[in-house]
Image (cartoon, rainbow, N blue to C red; front, side, top):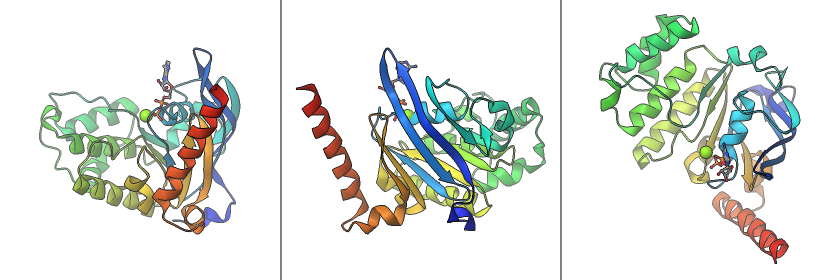
Length: 249
Ligand SMILES: Nc1ncnc2c1ncn2[C@@H]1O[C@H](COP(=O)(O)OP(=O)(O)O)[C@@H](O)[C@H]1O
Ligand SMILES: [Mg+2]
C-alpha cells in the first residue's frame, strides 16, 4: 500500500451512483471513495451490483443518476481517464486459436500499445504464453486477462472476480499477482462475492448488498469491531435481509 491512504487523492470517487434496470435500482446511490495506492475490495453476494458498478466506472454502462471521477477525471468523460485504467470484466475475450503471447500482441497492436513488455507481463502472471488460448484452464484465462489489463501500464487496475472458480492454490496465486501489481504503485480495485478470497490482500473494503453500500473503509476498521472479518460481513447481510423482509411484509 502506498502512502496516499492519508486521503490526499482518490483514484475513484462516486456520489449517488445509480443504475436502474426495469425500474429496479441495481446500483442504488453509491458513494465510493478508493484512495490512490490501495488494494480495494468490492465485496457483495451475487447480484449485489458489483459488475454493474465496475461497468459504470469504465464507461461501459451509463449511470441513471449520480456522478464521480476516476483518476481525477469526470465519469462522464471516460476517454479522459481510460488510457490509465486497465480492466478485466467477466471472461475477457481472446482468440481461441492464438497463443496467449499472440493474443496480447494483437491487443497491443489494436490499442496502439508497446508490445515490448509482453514477455515480462506473461512472466509476472506466471504464464509461458505459448499454448493456444483454447487449451487454457480457467486460472490461465484469468491470468492472461490480468496481463492484458496491464498492457497499457495503467495507474488503476480493475479486476472483476479474478478469483471466481479457482481452486485454493489458484486463489493464493491470484492474491500474489494482485499484491505484485500494487507493489508497482498501481491502485487495484478487485471484486469478489467471497470476502475470504480477497480480504488478506485488501487495504480498503467496500461492502455492498442490493446495490447499497454497507461498509467502506480500511480493512482494519472492519476488523476493529471485534470478531473476525467474515463474521462482520455475514452480519451485514443478515441485517439487510431482515430489513428487506420487514419492508415487503
Ligand atoms: N443488462 C442488464 N439488464 C437487466 N438486469 C441486469 C443487467 N445487468 C445486471 N442486471 C441485474 O442487476 C443486478 C446486479 O447485477 P450485477 O451487477 O451483475 O451483480 P454482481 O456482479 O454483484 O453479481 C442483478 O440482479 C442482475 O440480474
Ligand atoms: Mg459480477
